[in-house]
Length: 236
Image (cartoon, rainbow, N blue to C red):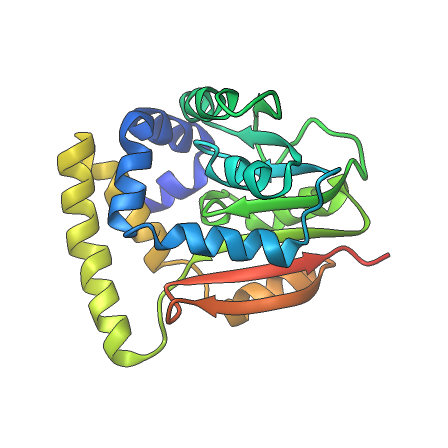
C-alpha cells in the first residue's frame, strides 16, 4: 500500500497501531532514549495544567501523556484514540494510578463532545497521523472554550545540516529496522519514519494553525529540532 494511503485512511491507521500496541511503549522509549519524557513534561508546563481540570488527550495512544499529567498535576484526563488496542494499554496503565482516566475510541476529526467542552487539550505525536490536519484543527477549536489552549508536541526534522543528516539516517534506516525486528511489523515503523520525514516544517504548521483560527502562543524546537512544541490559543 502506498504511503499516501496509509496517511489518509483512518482504518489503516487504526489497524497499524492496533498491531504494534503490545510493543509500542518499550520501543518508543528505547528508540527515543526516553528523551520524550522531558518533552512531555515541558508540554504540560507550557499548557499550564491545573489540578482541578479535566484535560482532553487527543490521539491518546498508550496513555503516557495522561499518566504524566495526572502524576504531576492530579488532573483528570479524557483520552480519544482511533486504536482500541492502544487505549486498552492506556486504561490498564492508568487504572494502576487511580480512577482519573476515561478512554473513548473515536476519530479526532469527529469528536463526541459538545462545543466548548474543554479548557485545555493536548496531542503528542499524533497530529501527523491525522488524514486532514485542517479538519482536525477545526474540530479541536470547536471543543475548546474561548480562550482555551491546545498543546501539540510532534516530531520534526532538524534544520542544522550535520544533525539533520545524522537524524535522517536514524529515521530512515535504524528506526524501521529495529522497530520491525522487535514488533514483527516493519511496515508500521516504516510508516512512522515516513510520516515524520514528510511532516510540514514548523513555519508551515504555524501558518496552518493561524489559518484555522488559533493564536500561536508558543513555537519552540526541542533537542536540536528533533521535536517541536506548539501551544495554541482559541481567541476569546
